[in-house]
Image (cartoon, rainbow, N blue to C red; front, side, top):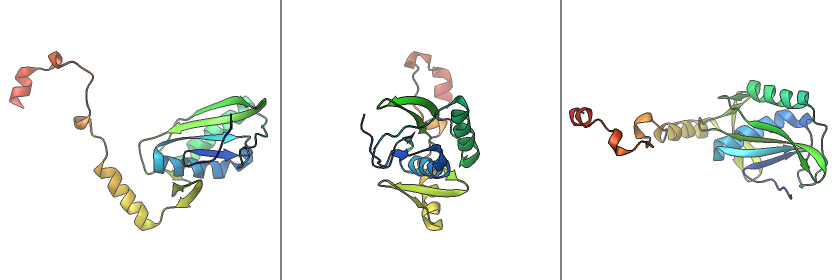
Length: 154
């Protein structure tokens, strides 16, 4: 498997770069709403591996919970790449904007950029315009579940 940084994929050599990783997660979520992050892989895609324990995975989960708002619940797992232990964090979220340590970021190519106050204001306004409301959601129920009397009264 060859990995390359992109707008939805972030590579970190180790969990020692966890703070920067959280910034990347929030930036990717703000731009695309989903992404993946790998620990144990250099920026150039070289797989170097990383020591992975249950405690390591738990610490990543705790730091994500503490550092990113609104909360997300990523899949954090040990994987083997090129015969070496690495960590994959798969994440998604629809409650934009996301903040890392109280600051909003946006992904541009493979970089994370702070949103200016004006960009953040526009971002929030656009998010609210297109936010999903329960009454705009499609249902999976067949039409025969419709209460015609209630429908006609409405």
